[in-house]
Length: 456
Image (cartoon, rainbow, N blue to C red; front, side):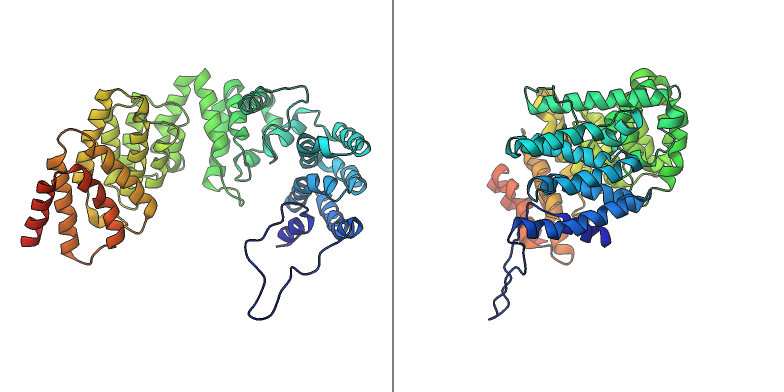
């Protein structure tokens, strides 16, 4: 609560409200607000001092206070014109850990507001940036890998990108290089792995850092073993897999045999097994990876939701339709969310057919017809609009093929039987599912199906 209040007290831009403050016949205003620059500065000054006092402590609470002040730096320097207070704050916080959050705040200010700052203030800001600029490897890891901030603002000033994509490519390359450097001194630089698997990492830089570590480490297996307790007992602020993904990816580029051995054991491992689908998808799927996923489904350590990552980033592209259908049919039979997970992945596989040939599309349409025809509609949550959207997309794709009438009529019959068997589903949402059939199935076949069910 205290940190939330501190962040609010330091807010100096992007104020907005989506509702009024009137109550009945009584008029309400926004309350007191500063009307002069001095009043703005007087408002923020105590909160800046609180952040500094807290930030000087080498604790988790102090680290959060330093991060909050760093995030507020741009608005405080530009809008509130508090260059003196922020310079003093930097002088007091730098001895703690170099204040990388403050350096990123300065970089943000220079990147976005350079043209709006008066020359004298700009000179002070550039001088302060040089003072806080990270120089050794540990400081660079903290500033460029672990701290949150706008992507790319930490790059050198002489970098001139041709497009926004260049920012990402350059930033990824720089962080990967930092990972390689850290791997050479792993006992020191990677002594504490908890920050790299924290949910606080807001960009994919930590993944790129992991790739570098995986490529250059003398023993990734030792790092994996040190990560195991963190997986079993995640950090209190949450757990993120990006570093582990990158580590396995980089490791696989150098020593694929070791990665295969690790993944073979991880399928049934008590700890790693719960994360296995994500671990496997850190590298490109091949026949061995497909067989591991099948085994993972049989072992049952991972949740059904974990397999929805198959639908991300065209992960199923290397698989044949037969392999996809085997995986998803097995997943759909699993309790506790297997069917919704299978529908989610199948919808994304359908969207990835834009680069596939006609034979692949025809095979997938045939499987989708069978999948929809065999559905147990009692397991479909008709209140889940996202699930229904994915299901309708699958149905449209399946019916957009030659001769779908028989399977379509079978599907409609099963659906109507479900309607007659017990409590009715939500009619409006049920209509979304039925609508594709009206367009694709001949009216005579559709009508016969309806009349036959009514007769029963």
